[in-house]
Length: 523
Image (cartoon, rainbow, N blue to C red; front, side, top):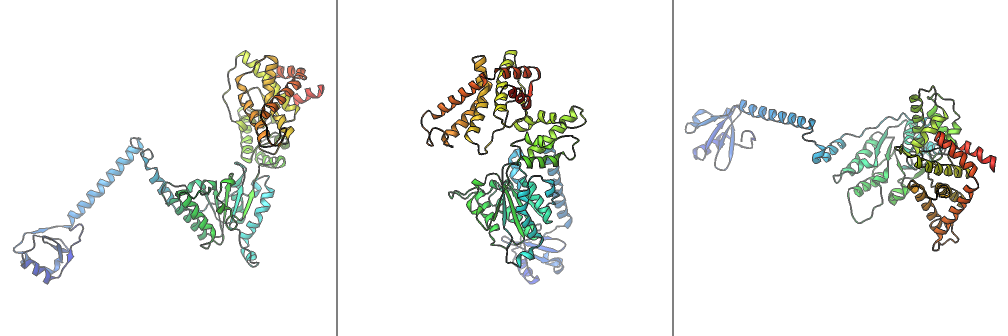
């Protein structure tokens, strides 16, 4: 009772009455109060009001404050020992918090931390090849610098900007450059950080983000990979992701004043986003950031090569990197620099780029150990591919004997004869081995699968068959036609085949320029 001290405070008169009624079972005295315990209740009276004569018929127990302190010290000591034991067990992996399913608790603690802005040190001059995008965003930068000028015309700041483009094209860097140019606080969050296990935590996180941005307005919120939280709602259920999306829509919709805050979001899957998120008044502007063109690749490469010792023609590297995004170009330059260091060269050369290009584009694979017979088949297979690729002027600069692929796949709009040229290149190795050995190896599977996929799209999706609506056996007819045309081409170029095979056998690599020189002598 003393520890909880939930006793009812009474007067001296009331205490005297209770004592006279003989209903008191025990008396406990402390420094401040004297406690009277009956069958039903506990009462207390200030110790300064009582006298010893009042309790002549009772045994009075004295409760000193020191005993309470002992209880408190014991509790603190026990808690401290428990904490030390817990940390020792966790350190020695006897008990792992996350493995025990406490990730949720740790995650909720992390997200209880206040959201703070970061300072962007990325400028538009650091990003090459985005002149069109920069023009689109300059108005927003000017708006944030001079809001009064626009408000005087009755113009309002765009609520949101959606950056759309494939991975690696620099969407995050662009958002940081906008924040840097505008000189405003930059709040970064990924869409995945809103997807919480606990119901309501994602929505709470969204509210905290916008609140922090409003408190520091004008400011920029950047949500990377917004498709993680902004996917279309099916209307059949209301899960945590949908409640988070609803909160995001509410924050952007102006139910609360969000003046001075611009939301920039990035996605490479605009088709999966909810229509409510895309309507005007939320994301007012959409900026499409595409893969860099040849000129833009040269601009990006120039940025990355500034601090690299070299004597290179940037345009030649730009020509050999068709299909590369900004991130891939950065990796390419870095890999070429590392190779030059490993080989103890004084500067990076075009040969270094040739050697690391396929590693960046397709990934490093463990080289297969080929028998002499397998190597002969491989040489013939690759020789035919490089001859066809050069003959049809497909984008590549050099072929290595160990290459799985010669040129990257592309989704760019292609004309029928361009698609047919690619299929012929993919079939060339099989055709050459069948001409020379009357059989081919299983390693042709990757090329054959891609050739089938292209032919299937040509007939079913692109209407490139004998009619716009495909008929039976149309794919088989087209594949046989391209196979026969490839066979006729390679049979007419046997001298070039022998030359390329000899080079691959000796050096295990050959350049497009070398093959083109041989073709020009015959054709």
